[in-house]
Amino acid sequence: MKNSPASSLRYLLKPTCAFLATLILIPAAAAQSHSSLSADDLAEIHNLYAFYNLELDSGNSRAWANTFTDDGSFNTSVGRQALIASADNWSASNPNTRHWNSNIHITPTADGAAGIAYLMLWNVGVPPAEVVLTGSYADELVKTPNGWRFKARRVQVDRPANP
Image (cartoon, rainbow, N blue to C red; front, side, top):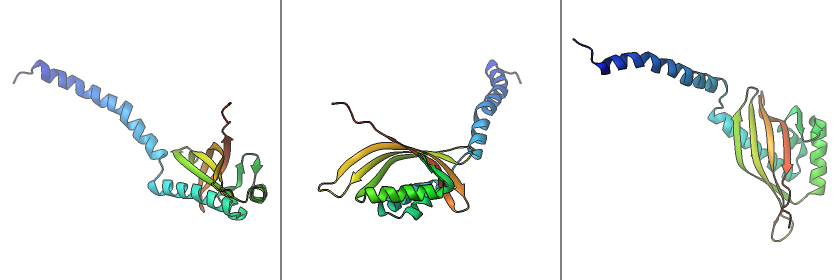
């Protein structure tokens, strides 16, 4: 049985294709297995975002602080007691606000996850309700024995357009 040029070419390409597959596919699969988030993780993180907003808007500063690790930070407030004080001050001066997050995007990291989300803050104490500010959050999240928590949360307020 004679080998045709085509069969010789297939023979030569098989090792090359296998080599390329190891360069492309195996590192990607290994990276996924080390830094992927399960559907349960993503659902829990999305629930954390909602719980954060609901508790802050209801004035429950202790439950809001529970969305953070004990040493967690929100902008310049660091640690549980500072977070509770910050939430108490917020609630006292903003009794009729509602936080609205959208475009929540979570990516795995070596330590847990990184999150970004858009923020829209509404004043619901006036008819009709009005947008007070917009911005975005940049988050570091970690999985603790009590579930996913914010390790660090920073808000960036959008600047109004110049008239």
